[in-house]
Length: 108
Length: 112
Image 1 (cartoon, helix red, strand yellow):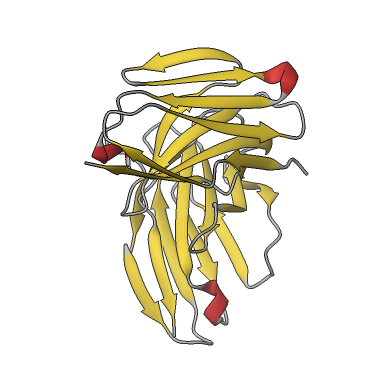
Image 2 (cartoon, rainbow over the protein chains, first blue to last red):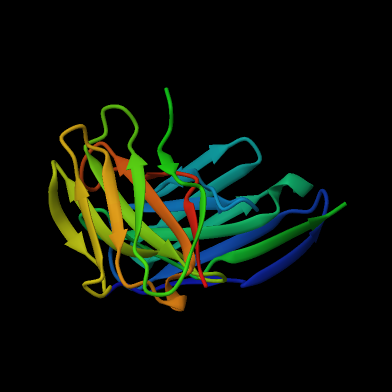
């Protein structure tokens, strides 16, 4: 099956700093999503981005499908950005394969 | 429009008992998927249902079963609970297969 690797596993930032989270996947995909999991466990959709670049406020994402990686950029980080960020790719049907996540802590 | 709703939000069971978790998809969504998230790990796929038929099953024992109803809501059943079944159980819905998945807030199960 598809393997999904995320880096870094942990990240501590000072408020206002920028960061880049990376997701590598082992096979070609036509569905890739980035999620933010808040402290209560809710998985929030950030981006559906099988290829190309998208931006939403301070967040943007780029997927280079031919090279099998995706990047999530967070600019001017805020304490509310803290949580776990997951990359997930669709293997078949609606089976999403998740990475292990990046734990982000933003300090004020 | 309401998002994906799951019930109950929290529950505590003892080993050997069974549990039923419920999920209502976003209106118009016909596909429901279930995921298990153990503490410190990413969610793991359990089942997918589309148009009331099972379309995918992850690597989980037969103690896990699910079904989808005519109104597209779904139930996940787990029998003979083990301590290792303690986890956050997430339901996701989508318009059809291969579309963007939207997750509910989850049901947190503790097995004592």
